[in-house]
Every structure is written in C-alpha cells, then in structure tokens.
Image 1 (spheres, one colour):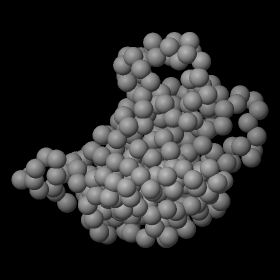
Image 2 (cartoon, rainbow, N blue to C red):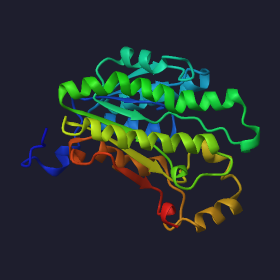
Image 3 (cartoon, rainbow, N blue to C red):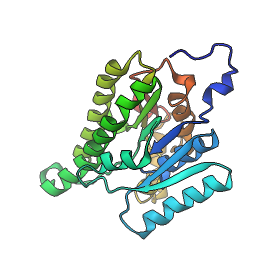
Image 4 (cartoon, helix red, strand yellow):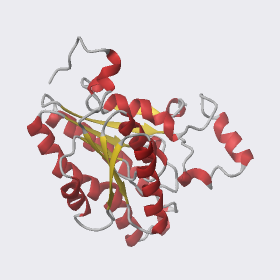
Length: 262
C-alpha cells in the first residue's frame, strides 16, 4: 500500500486508529516508545513480565502517564520464559497493527560457566516468545494490508561483549530473522525492521555506569560524546512504525552516537 503523496509530512507519523503492542514497556526503551506511540494516537498494549510487584507498579505508572496525557492504553502481563506466552499475549491483545519486540534479558557471565537453565531462559525470552508473537501477528497484518514490526536489537550484534555470549547471539539471530521476514512480507503493506541501540542510560545499565570515572572513559569512546537515553530511540521508532517509513523494510538502524563505527 502506498502512502498519500499529498499528505502533510508530519501527518505521516500519525498512529491514530492503530494498536501497538510494546513488549517490555514498563521502563527504559519500551516505556519511551509506548509513551511516544500513545502521544501519536495509538492504542498501546503495555506489556510487562509479571515477575513481581515492582514490574506491575512500573507498568501501571506507564499506563497512568499515558492516561494523564489523554492517550489510550491497556495493561498485559506475560512471562516470556513460559512456553506459548507470546501466543497467549497476542490473543489477549487482539488486533496488532504495530509490534515492538523490546523485551529481552541479558545474563552476564564467562562462556565457560553458562548453565543450561541460564541459556534456556535467554533463548526463551529473547527468541522463542518473539517468534510466537511474529507467528500470531504477521499473517494478520498481511491480510489487512498494513503492519509494522520493530525489533529492538543491540550494538552487541556487531560488537559483542565477552560476557554476553548468549545475549549478543540472540540479538544477531533476531536481525537475521528481520532480513528473512522482510523478503517474505515485502509488497503486502507490512514492514519489519531492526533498531539497534548502543550505550543507553537505562535501569539495566545503571550499575555499570555508576562509577563516574568508568562512565567518562566509556563516553570518550562514543563519537557523540555521551551515553544515550531511551528518548533518543523515539524518533527512529516512530519513523519505522508509521506511514513515514513505508519504504523502509529489512533495515538495521543503529542509534548509538556513532559507537558502531569506531
């Protein structure tokens, strides 16, 4: 489906009438994207992992912020380590026009000590549940003639950390899936792309960047001269998930301040 060439450029970013499922939306990048999509008119399905009260509290806070701004959102809990969790989540949400695959887990350790349980947990959350969501959402998007899938990758795809063997591998596999599926959905009005952040100031990275000296040394290696924020991902996410990005399919877009080219 082609976009209206006479539409105002800013109107091409409007998501009114679309339902966007953002996995792992309780904080960080997922939260920033969920808030932005709601502000652009989408009904947002806010997913959290249902692991504890803190996760539910964080997700409810996102819902409250969307409501305060006049947006629409619903809350969904799903533990992606469970078999068929993605399938059940998709059924609970209903029609999904935009699927943001953000939820993931990274367990740092030397490759010699990776246990079967820790390996399986990362594979389940980072790959199996996303596959289940893709199987549920993509065919319906193709039938309707419009859809957007955005996988949140990582600079680990090309610059893997020595203690993130499994996590970095799942992010590389995810982009491989994007390339594969982009060919299969091409021409149906559906696009699938990968957005790869670099060093982003999130709760996951707080402990690593707590030492000012270490953070300063790390920032020195980033051409932009600073660590990114979740909000730095919002513009690219809106582009790739709206009519403005209708001719972008199978792309890998780094949002990393230039770290990937150093």
